[in-house]
Amino acid sequence: MLELLVASLGLALAFFALLDGWYLVRVPCAVLRARLLQPRVRDLLAEQLYAGRVLPSDLDLLLHMNNARYLREADVARAAHLTRCGVLGALRDLGAHTVLAASCARYRRSLRLFEPFEVHTRLLGWDDRAFYLEARFVSLRDGFVCALLRFRQHVLGTSPDRVVQHLCKRRVEPPELPEDLKHWITYNETSSQLLRAESGLSDRKGQ
Image (cartoon, rainbow, N blue to C red; front, side, top):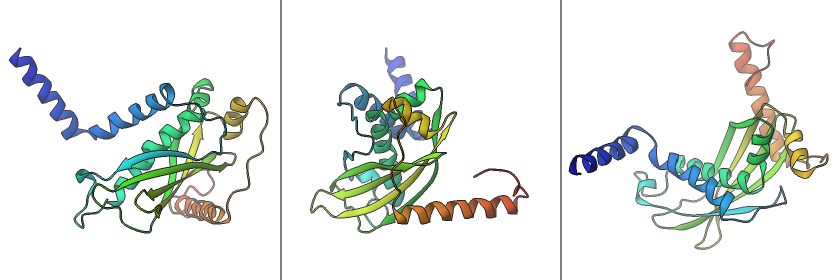
């Protein structure tokens, strides 16, 4: 019995030491919670909230939440968001999947130790290849938007239009994208062209 306990503890330590253990646990848990315990969100463009709190493991040397943690928390919130609005289920039905192709972050004010916050996630729109989402980190102390993140969620195996049509049972025109997001999309396209040219792949499509 003692040997089994020691072995179990060793496996647990190896899981968290060699892998990003908490991330690998939290994302599936967030998806399961969204699928089984939370109501379905029928409005694709509706904002969804995901609560969090700054823990000691989130801190950097300046004792506020480090920049990488914002991306991780946004990952968890985005997985829950796409589950509740049905996008992940539709992708599964269509034999497709989605990957993160680009992201950007703007940090406006630090989140401090044990400060509660909410991640406000919403779908901004889509084009022929990707969904575009936004995540706002809102401090529950005073409602201030501490960080603003944008994401390009690339769809593989189908198109965003087909995903939305599968969900809504009809053809839906994508909403007009915000002007600042259009500039970011243009920047990404220009960057892709430059990188392909540097690699001698300017005549091929890529990212």
